[in-house]
Image 1 (cartoon, one colour):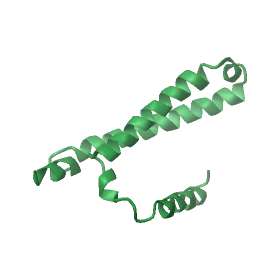
Image 2 (image 1 turned 180 degrees about the vertical axis):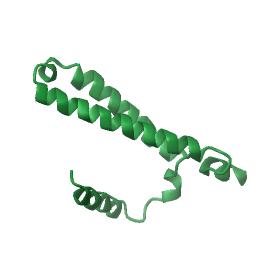
Image 3 (image 1 turned 60 degrees about the vertical axis):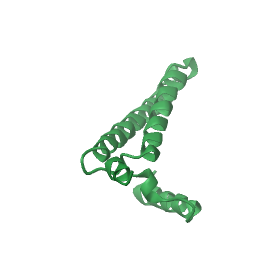
Image 4 (image 1 turned 30 degrees about the horizontal axis):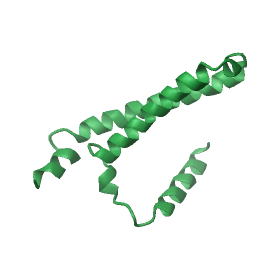
Length: 102
């Protein structure tokens, strides 16, 4: 997907979400961010286990390459969310800020 196409899709999704959600709930260091981290891990495992390990994929080099690309993209996403999430839990992060009022 091209950069402009990706941004258009992101904007469409944000528009569909409307005003029924609060961005702060999904900032790094929050449960919402942890949920995205978890889903990236689950999907990465599914691609690894259910696609890369599938005989129909393994015998077709072009399919295997696409599945491997999906796995690498999910791994990178997991790493980037994880790094931001851990930074968000630090001394000036969202989690500490959220807990300050308790």
